[in-house]
Amino acid sequence: PEKEMSALESYGVTALSLASEQGHVDIVECLVENGADINAQDVAGVTSLVLACHHGHSAVVSFLIENNSYINTATFDEWTALLSAAQNGHSEIVRMLVSHGADVNLKRSDGWTVLMSAAQNGHSDVVNVLIDAGADVQIQTDYELTPLFMASQNGHLSTVQQLIKYGAYVNVSCHQGLTPVMTSAQYGHMHVSEYLIESGANINEQNDGGITALMLASYKGHTDTVSLLLNYNANILIKDSKDQTALTYAVKYNYFKVVDAILSHCLYLDSGTKHFVDINTSVGQTTLMLAARNGKSEIMGLLIENGANTDAEDKDGRTPLLIASEQGHISVVQLLLRHKANVNKTDQSGLTALMIASKNKHTKTCKLLIHAGASLSMKDPDGWTPLMFACQNAHRDFLYLIRESQSSFDETTPDDTTVLMLASQNGHSELVKCLIEFNVDINRSNANGWTALMLSCHYGRNEVVKMLTDAGADVDKTDLDGWTAIMFASLGGQVETVRLLLKSKARINLLSKDGWSALSIASYNKHLEIIRLLLECGAMIVYCLQGKMFTCDPNNFLISHEYSENFDSSF
Image (tube, rainbow, N blue to C red; front, side, top):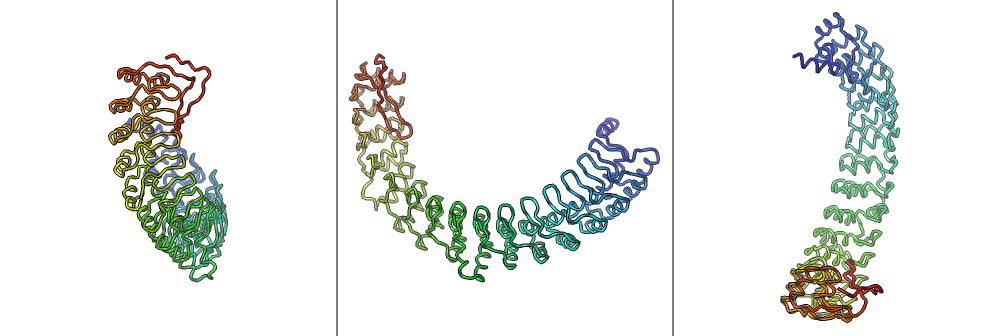
């Protein structure tokens, strides 16, 4: 249709280019004989010759060449007729173009050549034609890639053999120091790797990051290639810039068979190298730690059988057991405990495996650790026990787990904060319910005189507030400054909490030691709804006896009284 033809014409497509693309040689001949421009380019710079070469229409190519088509004309993205033919493996057309003067070493702006395209795609017959025509086998792109590198990366053994036969350097370094044998190993091309090694490739060469062919094969999990490299005596002790070995990569990415192959290879080495399993990375991690983090007990079993230290520490003092406990990897914890890992060892923060497991709510892990002798009474430098971490982090099942072995649930931090307070201030109602069932002292105060009820009121933990008041918590108990629970609720603007306390008959007109009432606190902090609620319930309008304002540190729930010279006591 006329509309379609106008659209084609707008892209520079001609009848000749369409016929060339389809391989209609008789039509091509007719159009050229009737004056069609044989070298016309479309909007992308593509000529009829490039199209015919790309699609392998040798008869059309032959006719166009004989009729003076420009052989080395490139498209706007730098594709020539020869590059198109070589890329697609059309050896007859390549031979034809070369015989008519096509430049076999013509480079694109990025340094890419025809030989690289042929090598990359494994077109051995094209490679032969190009080399016979003088193509440079050592030529490199701007990223220093060579034809041999491209053939090796894509596993084209016959092409690799051809290039080496014609003098390609097997140890030339390309982008970031990579060599042909490194890239073939990375992609698991075992036979290519073997041929490169037999041809003199340096098996222990390191790239800019210190990585070897063995590391790359291990990183990708190519067991056969790893075994090949080991048979050719690849050095398993070499470390990259991050102090990682081939074994490190295999363990990190969970390749059991590769780990087994590397460790089995150690049997043929002297006994001194067997302990390379404990080589630390730059952050102090051993292979056993990596396996523990990944939860791979089978790999860990291999490592331990080969002498891995179960109590090795990273830079933060964490052992494999501490790491596994944090992740809740039960099978790993079981394995480590069977091999006598120190169950009460602490990291640099003073945390034990049980503290970490209780903090992260890994009940089954906690059970294993306790059965293995983990201490329930050990404290971190801040005086916290596993029970305290459990209560802070809503780990209710931990309480039931230790119920029989725990004589008391009234443990306190150095400032006398109880586990009930920790659970209450964080709104962990299920834990609070559990602790009440265990008959903890619900009215116990900490060093500031605060109770669990006061803390839950300040933070508006209403479900907890109701539990505590129903259990008989003293709603009018005061802290060291004379503050009651309703004062804390008023300070925090907790309307529903105030309502709950009023239902529990909290006295609203009590004054703190500085003369503050719940109403004056709410007024000073502009909590209008609480003010109305208190007034409805009979609150008396009183004045602050001393010039003080009240603030709350949200980071540690500490209430502080700060002096203000300009305090306005009128409300």
